[in-house]
Length: 395
Image (cartoon, rainbow, N blue to C red; front, top):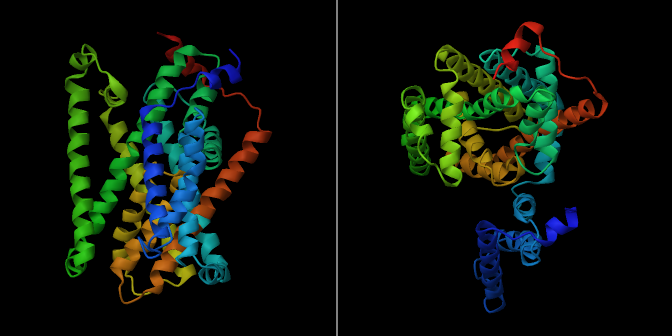
């Protein structure tokens, strides 16, 4: 079947039709300004209404629109942030003036790739697959390219699976398991950082009513997630056989079974999972150091380093929600709002926090570009040690 035939038969799903209904509601609300120019005054409504138009048209013409919606959502948020002055050229110029701090922060972000390769290598080794560390680094860097420049957030994961398992079908399942678990176990480490930030800043947070409400929401989500992960590991280690015999339907059911199947592989090597979480915490700490450097570059004021621990990871949690590609726009908005709430006596911190996130985004773009270059020039085949090939080839 040709590509044109598949597009002609494409039928938008319920979620895409739901987005179209949301688009129509936005346009109706925007039309209300014809009667009252002050109706829902602000730039957010027109920015989003205009941004969602391409995705809505694709849905009407029965074309895939989810990726377009996500991309345009990011563009709409960035237009909004620029239009209302949250992101302004003056603050960007100020950060560039202090370029050594920006360069240092971006250099520290490279530890995300190094620790990511280390973490993934441990997961692979737990299944008898030994991959050269430098090869893991290359694949992780290429993954940054796919995740940064191509719509979606899993393109780099699929590339890793394809390259390592290429030519050996017996490797597909264990490599997929390692990549899936690599993603899954990143969240507990992030939650640990947020909860630690709340705990060591309880007095400061309690004195700020808005910040206290936000911290309670984060703490509730963190504790709820901790309970979820505890139950997930319990099910994986002790009830996996029963779950396999049940029929799981729908995306959530299949995702739960995939998570259980991934974790149960390491039932007899639980230290591996602990090491992976600890390395993830190390990776997040490196990211935190990078943000401290960005804070110096933008001239952030009135924020103690311990307060930064909570604010930075609270903002990153919002940035990692898979709405816009790479969290573009939503991360800048979250940082601006969170720092404005935390430091009401320093209104300029909202603008500077948004630029901090832009510095982080610049680092991701640079490493993504490096990954693109490696992808373009590298033609090497992935080779595994002979001693591990026998492990892979057994069914």
